[in-house]
Image 1 (cartoon, rainbow, N blue to C red):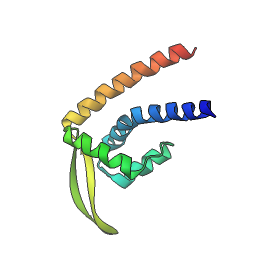
Image 2: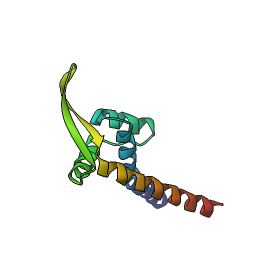
Image 3: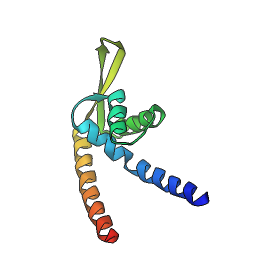
Image 4: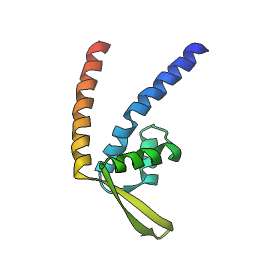
Length: 111
């Protein structure tokens, strides 16, 4: 049982480490609101709850990587749409490069 708990903890830490990168990848496709981000993450088998997503979005916005606009919704309250700033685009570019290098390193170790 302890091994299962350790495995689940390791998996959770791995997911947590790449979550910010995944969120930026989704926002880079075009303006998007939080529910759409959650849907895309779920489609990718990354189960994330609002309580995890909103603090990350807030931190990315505070860091200058995201901007947002409010828009009226036909089906409810106004929605906050997120887009990458120029700084966010540069940050994402660096993360993609890092991911490529890391991915190659891991593949070489798995042989």
